[in-house]
Image 1 (cartoon, rainbow, N blue to C red):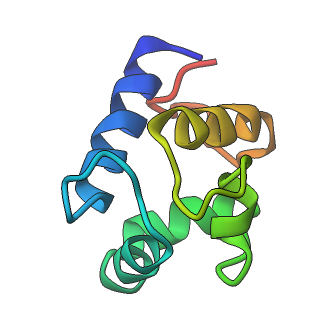
Image 2 (tube, rainbow, N blue to C red):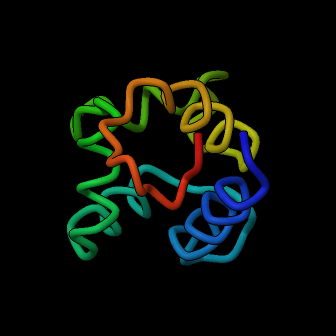
Length: 91
């Protein structure tokens, strides 16, 4: 995963963590998906269904998404992304 992509995913994670407690709750993720069409489109693009997205990302099933889980999930699904040739994500 490129540094640019990792930085973007980290910044996105921070914006979703509205309580600023260092973890993302299901409520925070759902609120961001409802409020931000770009985030919703990103999740749709990687194949995360809105209903099960939280469960897919929360790999240790502790009820919150850590930054590591977030980057790992999005990085692991990167090959599935439908990105244009001039994508800022690189190759």
